[in-house]
Amino acid sequence: TAARLLDKLVGHFLESNITSPAFITDHPTILSPLAKHHRFLVNITERFELFIAGKEFANAYTELNDPDQQRSRFLAQQKDAKEGDEEAQPVDESFCVALEFGLPPTAGWGLGVDRLV
Image (cartoon, rainbow, N blue to C red; front, side, top):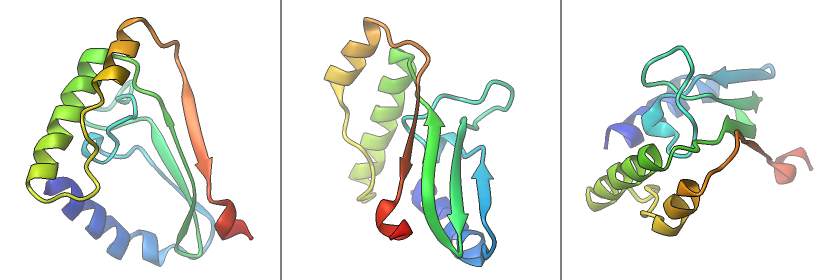
C-alpha cells in the first residue's frame, strides 16, 4: 500500500541516517490513523517521533476526536489490510461510538523504555 511504501522509504532514507537526537514532525495522515489532522497543513497530522542513533525512542500525537473522521480512517485501513498491509488497524466501531459521546482534546505519547535501558 502507499502507506507501507512511504513508511519503508522514510525508514530507509531518513530514520536510519539520524545520528544525533532529532524529531520527525508532521507525519502524513496515511501513516497516522489515530492522530488529529494538522491545524494548518493539508493531509498532515499533529505527530512527532524522537529518534536517537537511528532508533525511535518516542512517538507522540494529538488524538483524533472526530468520530466520522476516525471511522473513515479505520475503513481506509481495512481496505489496506485486504491489500496485504499487516500493520493496518481493524475497524473499531466501539471506539468510534465512544467518540460520538465526546472526547476532549487529548494527546498521547509512548517512550521506548526498552531502548533507553
